[in-house]
Length: 102
Ligand SMILES: [Zn+2]
Ligand SMILES: [Zn+2]
Image 1 (cartoon, rainbow, N blue to C red):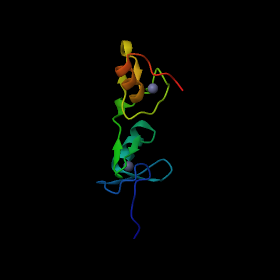
Image 2: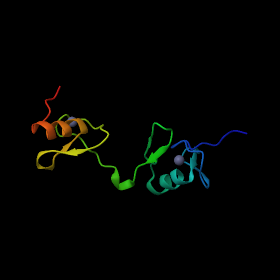
Image 3: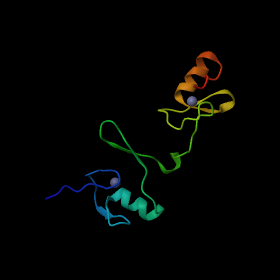
């Protein structure tokens, strides 16, 4: 007997199994999401193997206004409320100037 696994978020625990567009196996949440939004459910794999699912309205295309990175553990605000990545935000807080770009 093979272990069922969601092809999107890799969960093995779900109240019901669903099928995706390509007949791929999906958990209940991913299946419903794909049906409603016609796209795969966004998720992030955490280090401990658990899956964190983004809330639909929390997906914002942030970009650090200083170093242009899109990846940071947390977003910070700089002068005038500009979006800064964690590193730039901390630097700005400490030095009151924008972090010099590499
Ligand atoms: Zn899933
Ligand atoms: Zn930055």
